[in-house]
Image (cartoon, rainbow, N blue to C red; front, side):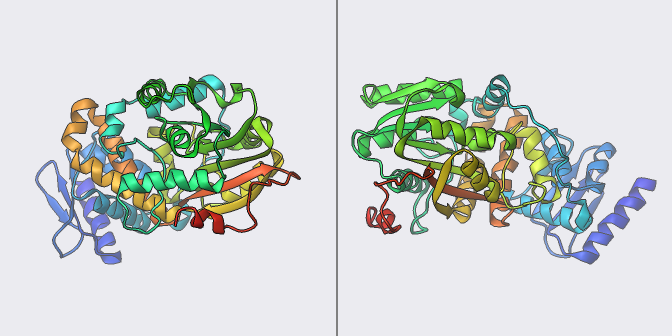
Length: 403
């Protein structure tokens, strides 16, 4: 048959280019090994129609085939991602990296709220199974490299609050507060009076419950609110893992809103994922295309240069910039390991499609950070032409405080 000859030629072409620890099993029992060594990954194709995904094995096509049940894959998830990336790299031409098609995403309050609900309102129990005990869903800070996840997440929060010099009595706004870990820590350890906002109803309900349980309702207010609707003035503002949802065209407006809400001598911290592709804003071989479709609808990653430009346009001056790319690679790897270890429990509380999406997304994100396709920057900023008296002359204060 035509497809058998085409498939055999395709496998031989890849074997000639690289030795992949991959076995391909077809619906008729026929097998193809992509190297002479024992396979680490087995890819099962239950129907001939799925071969169209394999002949153009972008990360987007392979991810879609897996999520939609067109193929099945067995093996360690990190090996699955590595094999998929090599398969794409050795099959697609360099110019075939599926650069993002220029598009204009409309970021209304309604659409942004819908996108947030899609990602974060799977269920609190779902996230609880692979996150740390405080349910922090952002890059951890492995100060020494040997911390467990829970310790590294607390160190991340302390790192942020120390960087922006949170003082007892300061008012703090946390944009995209998640399940409340940062505002709880800011109130308990640093003595701040906090407002946390989120568009996720699940996060809102659990964060309020955690605040009440901690006896901090007089110091922390949790709101189901869009950042564009917040009013007032705050001494400190944090935004952790939120601005990826803002939209590239909206970044100057987003930073302008932070500027308007920030006290004249206040400090803000923006902690977010960026792309390292300055021209197209896309991960190689369609990885970002998969994330757009299945994980973060309407999400857009800016390059760090665009972040700094938009920050300046919004009337803010960047005082300090730190790259935590390697920290996020490790964070995602731990999440992926936790996800694998709790796979059966996760499958009981969500459908198979969501299970498959998050399984490859977490491991794929770790791979992307390791490959320098995406990065994570913390940027301290304040109002332009305003001297923040609370910020010391050097960065030594950040590390002295945690010594």
